Image (cartoon, rainbow, N blue to C red):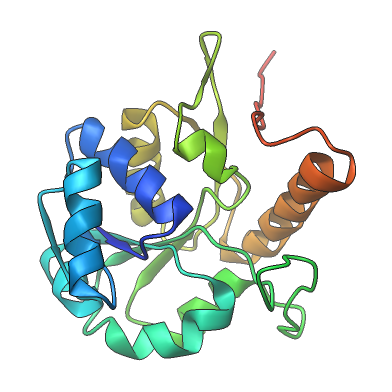
Length: 209
């Protein structure tokens, strides 16, 4: 399928590379066309352009920009009617990742869905470290789990397929309101990595008896 990557930071670059390696047609989007071109060449993407150019060509797009930049990015996406929006970021106010944004008890994903009601929002990969998406989801033969929250069952199935293709173990984490819980899971992962000092070469793995 055609997947646009909106944002050329660590998460966007890593997941874009994994999607491309899995055989999907990846289009890299950036505010800077030269950066988009360079990142596309780096990760093996099929095309590149500004945000709206990338989204316009895609069936689904990964919104992988910092939360504090979101107000400037959303107007640049162009039409998103019927497109699957994969939301992988968490709502922090700056790059210290220490202060959550006050969203009135809602998740960032719910806020995006309200602002882009024509998109099909799926929360995913927000609890996975950038180190994992830029290396491998494989841990000695056991794939890292990816938790998915959405009100659109078909969109969630598509994203689960992307996750499996890229080597992850996808799990249905419920409707979109559950994205609030997934963002709390990500906060715990940040604490484990940095406050506890365990680092980022680890991932959540759900096991079934």
